[in-house]
Length: 578
Image (cartoon, rainbow, N blue to C red; front, side, top):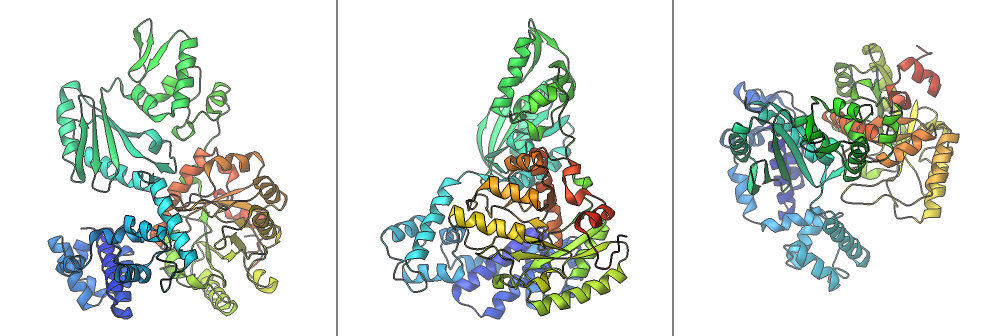
């Protein structure tokens, strides 16, 4: 059992303890223990074997014994006993936005609700309207949350798909009969939401049966849905479906192209082939039934008179026309990023200290790192009051001297108030090197008021970045409604960058709107919105969205050297242009 899985067990225990009404301090001990496990370096097995677990902050003796039992035996009796006290379906209620342990406890004890269906029925019968701690508005929100769950059923975040892909890539790497391996479909195109995972493997025809059996034996397969000579479909224990297609090495580039492109992209590619007197399908390109050789996708595109189209762009959104004129963008890559701006520390709702964040950023080779905790209005996230800002800035000043190899920026994620103001006085705002202005509340505001609200924040001279512009949460909450034309025009006029928030639950700015920003010359930032240093890795999802939105290195603020950033943002506090 790895750190991630063990941390999830501790979190589930904390949840069940809250349902039981256990002591708050005991609940927090498990929550803190889960966070501590997530931030550990090295494997749990090694820490236990070397008796180093006792040195980990937040993990006392009782918790340590449970973690050891969990890792060494693969299960925890205390956890199993707790689970038996509640129906398994009860935990589905936590998937409804706005339902936490306290509310679920009331629903379970007062109304004997154990399933989502019972909860929906109770709402429709108006049973929550008079229930203590709920009311009519809460009941309406719960119904909306249930509808969202129904709407998004069978859909998954791209991060889920990539996690599955990485596990399968490692699994298949141990089989010498697998000659080539790749993801395909919407996952390879880096769509923000996917329905399943498509993978492609090249094997000899004589090895197909063995390859299929090998795939079926993957430990996380729950059910084999269909099994044929060249395709096997399974459902994993997590619920997501995976389709494996088996082709020969000669067929691989053609199959990879075919099973990567969207339906519209592939239709247009086949039309181009037809106009050239060729036939194109997943098995190859043919001239009068005679196959034409191609060893790579680039060769396939060249046969069509096109430059190589990156997988992310294959949506029939003008990429084929651009490839015909050799005008495809030179897409940004993760290695192009020189720094990060949207990082939360333990001053607000982050896990790590500022020094730990700096050390991680330096280890990853970044030139600069910005600390942008929540502002004072975000009381739920321990937002910084002006005196907290002063304290944090004093610490950053000290750390600038201690870590001269990396530039440390003083930022804040300032809440946009209902009237469009940022939630600090100008005297406080001017103390920051940059400000990310973000929406966190009242996202249902009508279009006209929301537009004015965003325009007010963008027009504030201290705003450098508009964070997660729409406020959407994928598979959970739609973005707010505003006049996009006015907002984009204001971003351009006031030289405010728009963020691609790389958290896989957000991926906001949407890739379709990235093209709009790029066409208008609005700068982009690609940021992790990290609340723990391991969250830095989320930038890979943001880069995927940027590439899908035709974004190039030159369009991205944090792909620029620090000396350029100093000039762009007129940084003067302790940098002097150096």
